[in-house]
Amino acid sequence: MAIEQSGAKGEGFATISTDGRVLDAWFLQLRLSAAAAGAATTRLTEQEIKGSLGEPAAGYARRDDIRNVDIVPIRTEIGSLASAPVDVHDAYLRLHLLSHRLVEPNRLNLEGIFSLLPNVAWTTLGPCECSRVPEARMEARKRGLAFEVTGVDKFPRMTDYVTLADVRIADADRVRLGPTLRQARPSCMKAFAILTQAPLVIAWSKVG
Image (tube, rainbow, N blue to C red; front, side, top):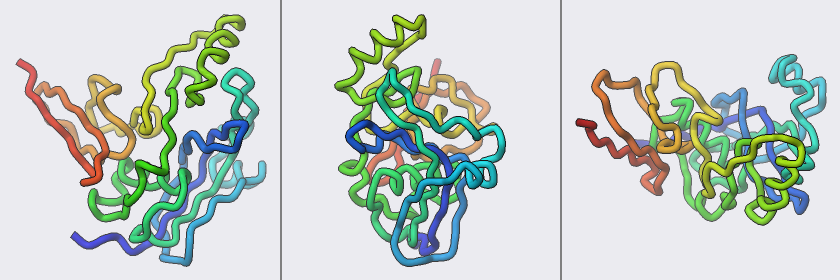
């Protein structure tokens, strides 16, 4: 199957640690675009947030002093999906394209994605640096907020970023952002869906 030659664009929010590390990117709007030179991510203005993401997204960008991160509005552009990802923003946009089924598996370049993505503590308050977890847990509990670490991995749960109406997922912990899931089968199944360098493996095992 031929690699997709088009580019892609997406608008959303990124979580940035105090030392400038990008922990994740959540794209609320994304689409394929004409091929162009290079890749880039820029910060959106308040007016651009409303224009691209709508009024409900206004005010979401903020400083989170529990996790010690900034949540910033972004626009990421990829010149060509045939080129390898260049940074975390780029990598996350490609994972969103796959999970939203805008690009078929094996039709975009994911070379080096595992080395680009940071290992992150995925918590009920959002992504957090692993080293920050003890302080974040204490600060959250002092404020009466629930704080649970649901996993430590390079890839988040897909359902925290992309939820598809025609896909049945009984256990969200088994499905990471990136795999392309098709319409649910009527039989009861247990599945593991993870991104690999293939880039897709879905292992099905029948229950009962």
